[in-house]
Image 1: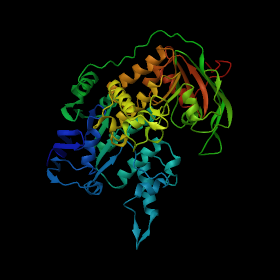
Image 2: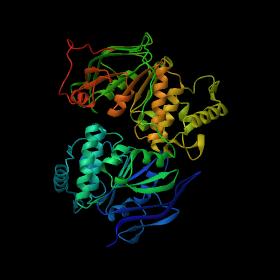
Image 3: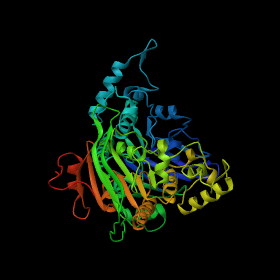
Image 4: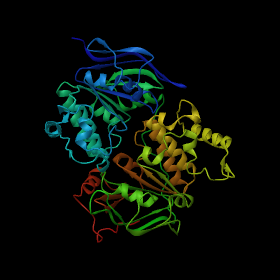
Length: 515
């Protein structure tokens, strides 16, 4: 029997202006978790898209169990029992969970859908692997963590035994990440083989057997996890030493920039309010982190704060001005910048060029328009400056379509645009989601630089390491309420976890939960 269940030999894939995969060889053993590590734009997702039939390579061959196979599209991949959970989920939002899972392989009898057996199989799979879902829920109404479970169940429903996970933990809570790691280990015990794309070195060390590192489209090497360290992997990935410590100056706060009083936001999913009577403040020169398990009101809070959603009660002031009813552009002009949770839905216009996306918040300013016409040379000059300053990698520079860029470089474009506005308040929601260690190091330095320059930073993060290392104050949100305020120097991850899970809460008598 062949040692490798999948072999990708000498794969080359090119796009206009860029060689995404340059003569890469990757070999997957039966029953192993094989991590694929690399910077944003290193070619990881492209390589897996070649294996899944989304792209055709210019050179190279793919073998399964020693036999050359030709994968022209995802149907061919599924026929070979290859499944993929994409970084950006491929789900129909107005369909139910069940309809998404069976889409393309719908059971039918004489042309009529037979959902009963499909439902039983889905429920059995969800029970077996601890992937509990509501088959009748609409995708648009469930959290991203639940959506990922649907993607995994899609693979399992098709009896795939080679499973590709593309950045599977980028949108998950710490608890969901632990669950996913356990699920992946149970898959390999059953003989399934996993290709695991990630930027998170802790996860690779915890769950992977081997790791192949890509850098700028080339294969740097494959190592056994038991024989390597996080530092060695990060050096292979970025080609230099990476600092995992976050250096911050002494805390020196000024006047309050943001004041939120008794904010209440209705829920779209149920009759209860998503945010309930929340009050907080953020001062100049501090990073305040709003922590919590996903689905506890953080997203609705930020949507109301930034003007994306209406609130039913409360008051918001920014730099002393009441912005409770202000439109989004007015909030932006008054000094609010927003790095959104969903870069595709709220961060970018994907079919616009990179340069057009970089001036989305400023195109009406005299520097970029004259008498209603864009000053394209100035837009190009400004975009080139940000591309260089923030190391945004794109095949055709400023004219690259945002849709064609890697997820991490899309994120860097948003961060460049929002920070370069010189905001008084930076609202950063999951700012390092989907970024590699080098980019995370850079983004953290940018956020700390804003703090040290006397700006106010409100950070919303699910990454507990990021919460502990970046914050000057931590506010924990549970079921739409702030249940505790903490100093990261005197609290622990375990203590935060208890409040995030609702097991503990501070009373007003213990500590007033405002700044």
